[in-house]
Length: 320
Image 1 (tube, one colour):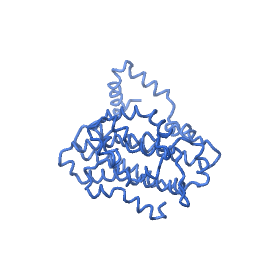
Image 2 (cartoon, rainbow, N blue to C red):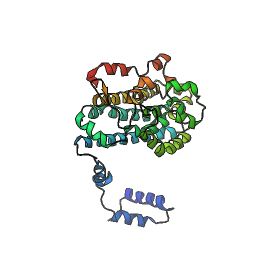
Image 3 (tube, rainbow, N blue to C red):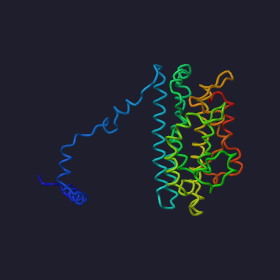
Image 4 (cartoon, rainbow, N blue to C red):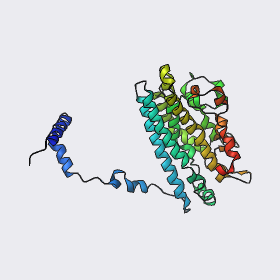
């Protein structure tokens, strides 16, 4: 049977592709011949994936808790995947950044809209029991969420509002990192000492966070935006996408966590400590920290009112 011209052309292209590999095309064709057909379950490692939910107690809802957090981390991975592409892109290309930030916002929307799983999809009585088997682990220890912040904006923008007068954007990365906003949320509420949760987290991830910060110094998403030509910076679609990302990451995401905390950790004016000992009432409200990734694109009044939605959120019980 004669070889079709299009197949012959593809074979020539394959020969060209593999000619410098040290093997001739025939060896690769043998591999293709002997290889098994790919299945869906093998491609996504389904059996492994479904084996990763390992509860530490007998309470059924703990499996929901584990699975939801694993799903969240996978979406964080997708967000970082898009962020790295923005940072690595060499052109002053508003369309490229709009597309990538649009994808990030879609991931955030999915996460934010799915939070009812945590707010309304778990039995409070079960949660208050199995959470005690998780000490001192805490969602506070999500390294990927901290990486998202580092890729978005310089450390200075991650200082709590009342600490910015003590430092400048030119301060050392080490000094800025030591005073980053989220560390203040993981001190013992009684002694003001660092909790074990924070100590573990710093020991495990500080070297990685500092390495990333040094790699992207001057090239975070915000700094890339600042270095765009004026006509690119003023693109209304780009500004809209960046504002949406800022609100999703620094307001809406926190509000969802506040909803979970108030549903499961507050009742009858009694506040229960988080599993890591974090002072969540002072740490989570966006209006308290006023973390803004892209301050230049917001007006003075918008920055002053940052996170006011938290107040409205707490005044409307149906959202909790």
